[in-house]
Image 1 (tube, one colour):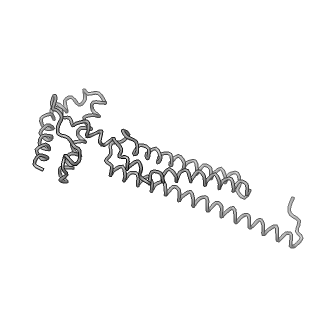
Image 2 (tube, helix red, strand yellow):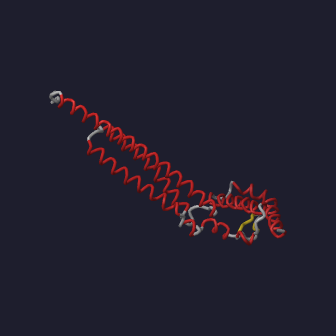
Image 3 (cartoon, helix red, strand yellow):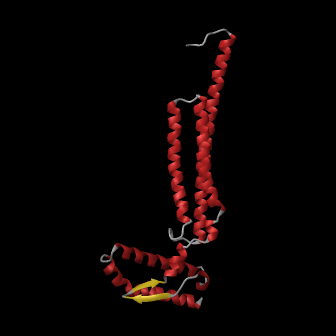
Length: 217
């Protein structure tokens, strides 16, 4: 731990010695350079967080200061690379496959339901079009969820720890489950409405036949 605090002290000292030059050069640097500097500062905050929590540098794979040049400090690139590399256990998380399967199931269930409703003839064209629009918006939301899932399980896309990635996967899985539950409720309610109309139509036909009332042309 003593070594850890010494390294943290060097990091803080580097910030103080470079502060004046850093701010004077801030407006002169290119966009990519500014972004890199922000990343370095963010890395320091993460690094300090590990120190406060008492973790060993060796265990967490963090490295010492690589170099100090022109008043700027830099951390070893392995630090960022470690946050961009996805652990295989993250990619193999059962919830990754479940999230994708939920969307595929939504498409399959919707297509089957719409085909049944169209063949049943109990819904108007406007009602079928409304159902289609709602499903279309839902699929846009689902595609965004899948895009986010791809990012979190792809190396180099996001700088996150394994725990952060797994937490994000859980959130995306829950989000897709909510979408699936919504679609189930919508299609079930619509099928109940169509079935109710079918029963009403059957009752009317039965009553007309019973009392010898001719159906309207």
